[in-house]
Length: 492
Image: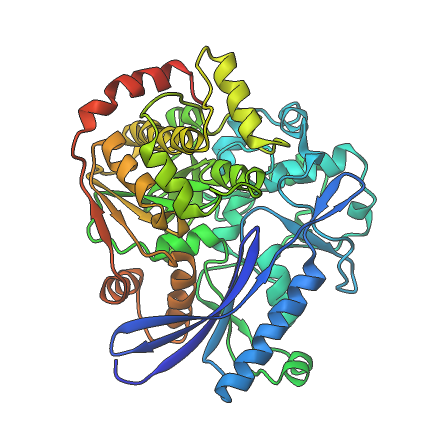
């Protein structure tokens, strides 16, 4: 590859959004952040909403900046976001309401309500998706249960990245990796599941045609081009679920590896050519989400660095609140003083995370962490042990042996957690790249515009372009007593 190719990724996270420029040249990818903006949910009468109009204004600002800085358009543009959330459009294509966030309390009891219509085992058989209370299926069930008037006027359901692609290019489609997160998609039949929509009492016609990662949706509309000065002929349905993009950027060779996409959530799993269903996968509550190249990400959601992020908010007025200071304090704290299950419901959205951690420790007969360093160490050691817990489960169902772990995403910057993960699991950890989601987004675009040809070539380009740090376990036996204590906590 000798010619230079420029691509633009819009990567929206639950706390912030970014526009990133990717440049391909001589078989390497360079990534530059063009713009960053806040993603601040709105609270309206006790419910949490995504402020889609403001986010779209920020996206248009980024497109305008790209046009001013580069003059000529990129070859393509694509949007990725977090999973499961959606907006409803009326017959005229207007958004009926601001989409609810996945942490909104409306889904309480919705899983149990839906299981009275379709048994849990049947839902898993038809979707292969991990049961989480905020899955799209249960968000819709909560709306049906509560008699939401929005459903009467809804013509189309568009997931969050679908909404932005529609607003940019005027095309309504849903991309495969995102469709599978909803628990409404049947991976065996490769389509929306009629039985589940029948149980909801909703028409499957409200859903969009599912396209594979790398499908070109169309061009940026003339209206957007006039407003921003930005023109692009190829709006691409990348792996629009951010973890789908991140896993595409795992710089792995061979098959004997697992991954952890590490950030607010830790998503841990393996890549498989086919979904892994059946009683054991159901009992262990693993999910089968779509991947690039028609693969499946067999994984489990783990709470991740959410616990630490919420503690940092609580400590924001303290002197030791920078990230480096927190890690330094954790390294100095005594090991294995207290352990928690990061996925316990008490940590989903507590008003005060440090207090929730202390209460959990007291309830489980442990001395709660008293210092900031001890609290951070408790979180990181517990996360590493939860990785081992999920790894042991993965080994029972994975289609291949697991000999190493690739950690990608923002959590790579937490070198202490990477080291703990290697020690707790007894496996080498290869950490990087940090910007895996944006890299995967950009390289799926490169596949769409015929600059790379396959998932294997994407991963080769990642290896050529970005450093990876290796952490080998040095004393994994020291973690065994802590592991036995952790298992006794009966983690979820």
